[in-house]
Amino acid sequence: MSDSNCENSEPETQLETGPGGSGRKGNGAINTGGPVDGGNDFPRRPRTMIVTLNESDRQVLMELLQPHVTIVGHAVDAENVIATLSAIKPSLIIWEPGEAINSIEICRRVAMALPKSRFLVYTDLYNATKHYNQLSRAGAHGFCLKNSGSRIVLEAVLQLIQVGKYSDPKIVQAVTSPPSTRLPSCDLTDREAAVLLRLELSNEDIARELEMKVRTVEKHVECILSKLKVPTRSAAVLKRM
Image 1 (cartoon, rainbow, N blue to C red):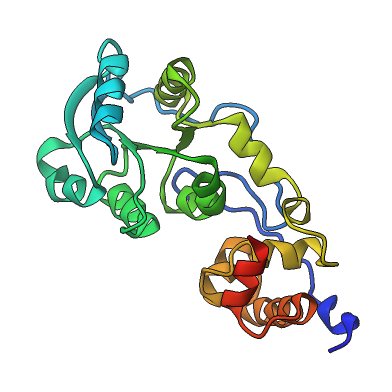
Image 2 (image 1 turned 180 degrees about the horizontal axis):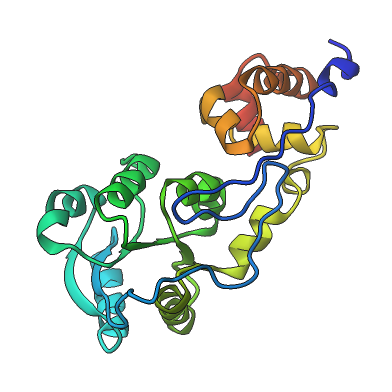
């Protein structure tokens, strides 16, 4: 396979919109400046559901946020939230995704069930960066790092209440940095590197996230395997690590 075949993919950069849209483009650009339309009817003291994997984390968040929000429920996973949405009707959901659940689908279902609610993803840098674009399109309004400390977490929640959007600067930096700078040097283009970072996803999901055609993704995958000298996608993911 010649390198020229690996470089023939046309630019495809369509601005993303939708619930909690990030303004990110398929070429890696992201618009983080200025508040979004937060909506004047959003409650200043929103009914809040807290969903974390760890009970002590939940307790810390509840104590931190109690003066500013009305806690109406807490849970260990989002499946419990979905089952009680119609009864609790939270305006704000603070959620730590777990590995055992489909985080994108759950975010989409919550956004559909409560279109006026706001959704803060509370997670680590790796997962926030990996799923940023998909979760934004699915309905997430904010991203906060769970190890950022109480002051930053409170700032994230208050900004989400006031202007409708928040993304930790470290997450923004990770998302906007060229993908090739996050990987070992192997002569990949930025677009190939962006595909490599998402090889756990299907070609269709990669195409949607990066605003590419599925055939373009397939060509990039072929080039990645050739350049990394590996036979399978799984081997490429392992070499990426």
